[in-house]
Image (cartoon, rainbow, N blue to C red; front, side):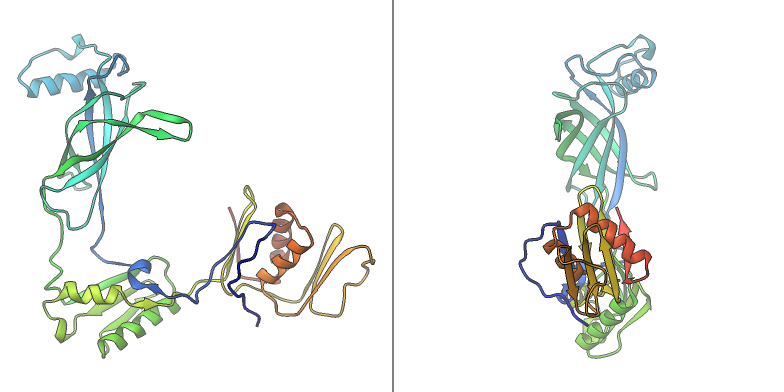
Amino acid sequence: MIRLSLLSIAFAVPLLFTFSAEAARLKDIANIRGVRSNQLVGYGVVVGLNGTGDSKSEFTNKSIERMLDRLGVKVNGKDVSSKSVAAVIVTANLPPFARSGNKLDITVSTLGDASSLKGGTLVQTPLRAADQQVYAVAQGSVVVGFSSQGVHETGARLPNGAMIERDIGQEFASRKMFRLTLHNPDFTTAARIVKVINKELAGKFSNALDAGTIDVVSPPPFEGKGVELLAMIESLDINPDQPARVVVNEKTGTVVIGHGVKISRVAIAHGDLAVKVGGEGAAGKKDGDRLMLMEESVNVGDIVKAMNKLGVTPKDLITILQSIKAAGALHGDLEIL
């Protein structure tokens, strides 16, 4: 079978090839079970706005009432009306092994009809995880963000705007078993990982439970040294396998061809061009027609190169690939975005 070589070629059609020949670090294709971030969310108020806050709304007024009540000021929420205050939702990601006293970046988004958070200050807001426990507290001056249309003033970021209040993390040093989960489950990749790990540890200390889960038992030399063991394992080079797949984006005309996609013997006629894979020629084509003959057992990349030479447009290329797949001659998945 003919395989693609990595060449710097300018294509008329935006085209990308993916290869599995290059090894990747294990840490880049798999996660260690238990090492993950957690989402935090909280409800708060931003004060100090220059007349761009919420119009009179019940939940904003109640928020102001509760906030002032905590500060020892008794007011009736129904009597509160201020365009300098906005109700907001505060979100953040709590990293693994977070420790009390560390800072977090937070995002603030309006909840009501406030037109801008510019110049505002977020009042102390507790941030909770899915277990409803408070893990951080946010407060500070907000900085409005930007979008492709310019300033996006109903959303803001606060770099280091939250303080972590509770330690997060598991005791990895003394663990005797670790579980790896692949980002893209694949039986071949899982088997390769097991083989590489066992070779590195000089014994059968790793086994695959399925296409996406691999267990590693800590060998005697690494007893009580889980951190060192994981540091060694995650730096191992792995050759990840991948399914044969062609991905096309009809809006942009981009074609991404995965490793291993092949084409069976097929003849293609589209408008005034013809491409034939295998055989001596394309019957019924006149001398003035655009004609390209190719060897049998080529891959999709060779077909695309040939069509580029014939001046095929991105739209026509996508249509041809869909037709080849429908004819059963394209061996791989065809995904349309």
